[in-house]
Length: 209
Length: 428
Image: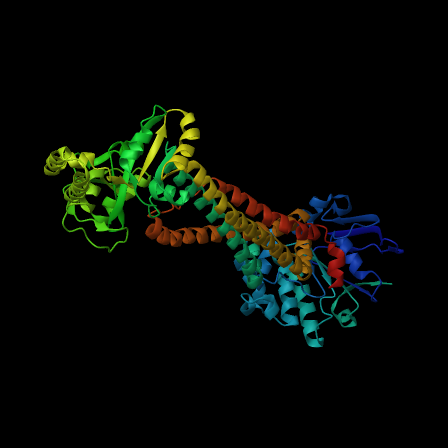
């Protein structure tokens, strides 16, 4: 589902960062572990098409996304990729449910509120859907982010430090839920983290140095 | 969905939005009010001016003379001698003279003594009845009929002066012989009769008094020299009709004059003002002067409205720009969810447009409210109401308001357009 080949990235005025080749299949989960500043987030942004690599190829669902134009890339990202960020971002003026609905809106697929509600049920946030994002706790916000990331049935879910702001028990719950739901909804999951607590929870791991 | 995001976002910071909205509405309201009333005042002034080249009346303020004799909104300057006026206007340059006598009213509506040609001057046509033919018969304007309930066959007393509750002339009845259709001119607010009717009301004993004076003068004369004339005077004294015809003190309030040639308008006023105790005023000039005076005030209001509009634009800009910092995560998020740069740009511009559109709507509502308040005053003082219909320039006003919203949103939108998503998201 996701295949990378010799990708590298160079920030303006920075050094060239080469990345190892990755391969993740549908329903699989991959944990990329690395120290702060080793370029984990950059890798995730490259995979998600938020940054364009200096060299190499990234194939998602057979499409080399490095060859897409800006608009096509935006569309591709909206349709096939779901993001979870270290600090959860929401459109603050919308409710949690509306934020989740936004994913399907930008993906250009019809809203399926029942499906969203069942996802929310699996994540244990059914009662929070009509609240504002700011009224939720960190853990609840992260769960809502997971719901949003898989709401539009993406092929790939990219998670950036999804647990770093959570305590031990919540971290493991969120990480487990994330894997379960991605597998269940047929999405490949790539998680980057420096959080050693997650090592025990992921079968496939890559160490970034 | 996009509309939902926009209005939710505006409601998210309601005070910011409200401030921008109020400023926009206020400037739109002032400008719209000026447009609507300015145009109608000009139209109304023009409409009532018709082809009147000159107003002749007693000496005093020329503007007052014009306002009172043409627009019937001010008190008259005094009376003039009809005979002298007729001598003056017996001139080939003069096409038509409309004599006007007034001073009485019925429930605040002026009773105007004139002749029927005054009605045709304003294109008045009868809704019912006929034009006045005899003294004490009146034709009432459409507004007067509607507001007072006078109709053909009604009988009423006039009151002295212009106040609604004045001293009634109970010794004389006016009889309504006709009602006019609305003309949109000053005619609608008048009660029209013969010049003689007004004169009769005020000088019921005029004939006798006049004769007595004349007789006395005659007596003096007689005592001094002339015996032969005594009989003549006495005879005249016994025949009031003749006395009335000859009475030199028959007065009217003012006269409207239409010239045959433009030469009249150049020579006649100077001649009247210099050589008689009457005053001639050119209404077009006086109204121009009035409009120029009003123009200063209107220009000041326009300036204020434009300044408020500018500040409203700034306020839209500031509220969008200030929130840009906190909203950049939202924008990056939306980008990560697949929206294009253009979408984010449009989102912000649409917010500006929505604000200005609502500002325009509220402003229009406010201006209509203003017109109805203004009408309550105008109806009482000038017997004039402004139509609250839309004027064409208001379409321009809508365009300008929207443009201001767009311009105010353009800079924040351009900044959001150029947002570096990857950097913003990793900052967070």
